[in-house]
Image (cartoon, rainbow, N blue to C red; front, side):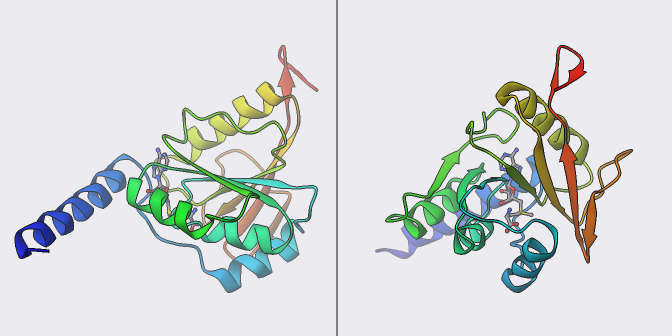
Length: 176
Ligand SMILES: C[S@@+](CC[C@H](N)C(=O)[O-])C[C@H]1O[C@@H](n2cnc3c(N)ncnc32)[C@H](O)[C@@H]1O
């Protein structure tokens, strides 16, 4: 491969990462050891669970969820991270990854818990998106937020930088 091609590939990668950082939270992966402890303390995952990771990065949260027996569904805007995650879980039918905007995706009906590692700009909009999905699929959902409090909402539990919230399904303006 010529240096000219390598240069263009590097530029494309840098451009895509910069662009996705402008539209939402930049790519910063969660730490595996902290994640394992946080799930054990706040929301013990098991076979009954399907975790949605909003902005799934390199898929590390999906991997940890799957270690506990849960299924995983990730949505990610950055095509390089989507490709990496697809290759990472090529033979794992429990994990699905979609390229797209987290604000426009429908959660699978079996979703039980949602992982959010966003930023200040987006946290309220992300919770609104989770609320819409809880109403659409007709059940309460748990949200594990890494590092960001949801404005005007009390967490069910806290562990270090992690907060667990319950989003109650609302139908026709009434809690289901
Ligand atoms: C802080 S990283 C978290 C990655 C992963 N959830 C983790 O905890 O390791 C945020 C990710 O969200 C992605 N992202 C930002 N805005 C997005 C959007 N609107 N739709 C989908 N993904 C988005 C970024 O590309 C980045 O990979």
